[in-house]
Image 1 (tube, rainbow, N blue to C red):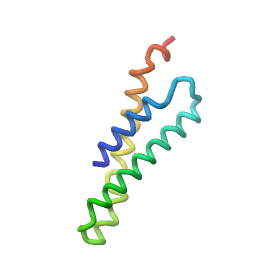
Image 2: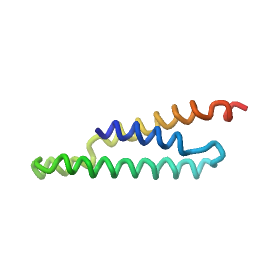
Image 3: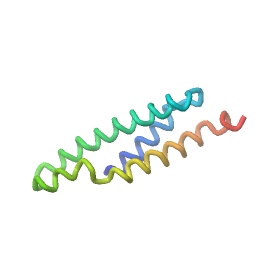
Image 4: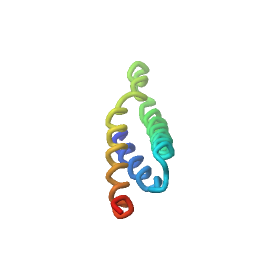
Length: 90
């Protein structure tokens, strides 16, 4: 589930960031979009894990964070490049 949230966050970040933004603004925008989607997936994960023992429920926050970050970055780069390829090249 967290991997799908990473893909969705990457697609949204790739669409939201225009080519006119400087590097700092683009990084902050990507981080904020990622945090919103991560906290949403965390809330959904906690709802799903209500009947799980407490020691395993604590792992809900950290499980899948590496695939989330990787897929966020990969999808953001692919979508951004596909949408703005002509404006980047010229």
